[in-house]
Length: 271
Image 1 (cartoon, rainbow, N blue to C red):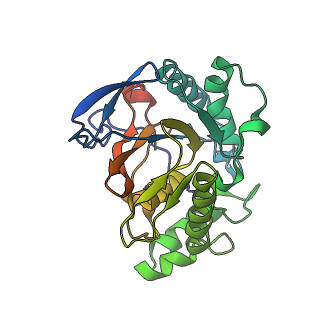
Image 2 (cartoon, rainbow, N blue to C red):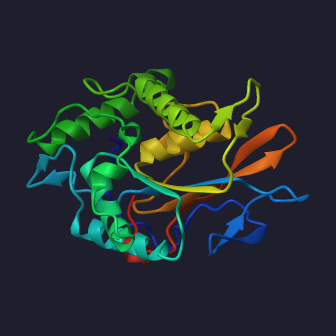
């Protein structure tokens, strides 16, 4: 679980946005598509939502697998409204409480009541040490120690928790199996090229800063680092979008939008 000091985003801190050059109509929703040219379209869109603001600390004590704060619930309602006009072929959610609570409004609006039926366990955030009920200073000290390490030692993760190395491997394996079940497999190539058997799939994943950032890195074919959530800064209840683009021998993914927060007022933006 990636845990940062929860702060409001300053008004001038807007979403990070990749240049978008064309608008297209898909499943009744108007979408902006990056890098589209020469008649080549895209086949798969993956929409990534991060959970709302969680209550990491209650009465000075750490909370493992925390629920959302009151603001986090408002953020969840806002992201549901932002996506209300879009059709998704599939919606999947991390098993953790904060992701479930974030997904509930958008699932409710689509008549989905059984969260168990849309849970994907591979979307779980990196696993922290068991801190529940301990003073918040214990977690603060652990994060400070991790940040002070030399870069290569960041792969070890927090002492007593899941290593970043194991976490990245888990997300890569989970994403590979998930996409393979949907007819998307990587080519035997040094480049990040995929073969798709299905067409025009639009998939929504509700997960976490760590999960989403590692997945973005993987699909773009970038070399992973043990600080992906700091390389791809993703706000609470934000929306990120990946589109696939056709080439001569397959498809590749492009990042069309990162951490879109336009559906949240400035005072409601947290990280």
